[in-house]
Image 1 (cartoon, helix red, strand yellow):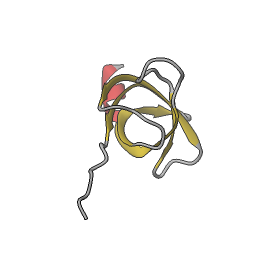
Image 2 (cartoon, helix red, strand yellow; image 1 turned 180 degrees about the horizontal axis):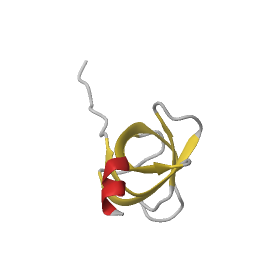
Image 3 (cartoon, helix red, strand yellow; image 1 turned 90 degrees about the vertical axis):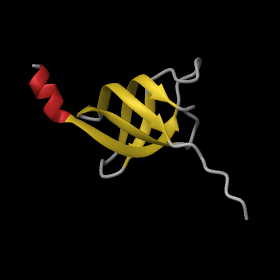
Image 4 (cartoon, rainbow, N blue to C red; image 1 turned 180 degrees about the vertical axis):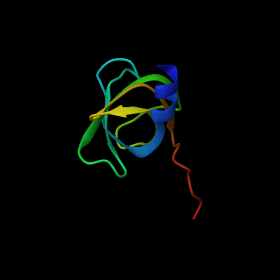
Length: 83
């Protein structure tokens, strides 16, 4: 079973469009992911960075239907650009 999971674990990149109420990183999050139609529910077990509405994130997990469970997320911090 583990081998099968390994094979299906993928990286996705997308935007957080809904965060659950409560704790900062409480999941599920609803995201739009590049290359995936529709909204995806992401159940995050490990997160780097602070998830906020509209943030870009990289997600590592297994996509089944429109759900990713036991996902690992890296939030892309906004770089402040000096002009």
